[in-house]
Image: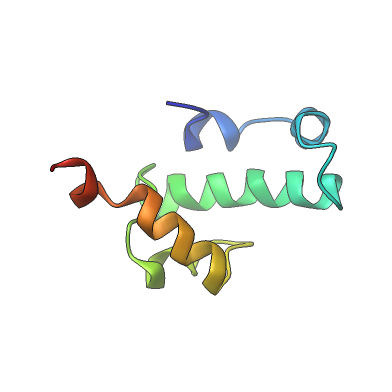
Length: 80
């Protein structure tokens, strides 16, 4: 299943930065990941939202990433 918002919201950003070190601005993005996980935990009860509108409310998620996440995370897709 991968990391859950509960776990990521408590993670040390420097540890996340090590995992994503090949990404530009890994330290900044690692902090954003922790913030985003905390938002998912508090605003969406730990469930990553499906709608693009809700996804864009999360720190660091813009229109392009929201569209990708919407398709990947759409629970309707997995019901087929």
